[in-house]
Length: 80
Image (cartoon, rainbow, N blue to C red):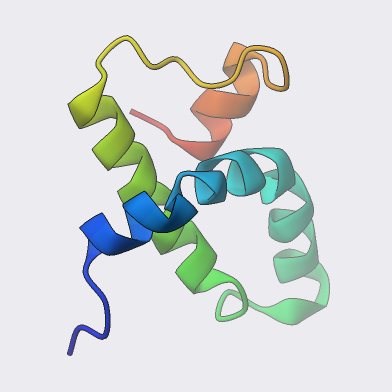
């Protein structure tokens, strides 16, 4: 059951999920291994992945925000 479609989320600022997830993925992964389990933040992973796919589909030149992230950050968060 869909509550809201991906386009609406994207237009409402869902692109920020890509920034958040790329920045926080190592921290989230660490806490999931230590105590939180995989269930916590699983939807953030899904949301960021969907927004990333939409960005790349609309703008193939998108490489991530090189001011904040290097190539390793992007490839870790969004493996090809």
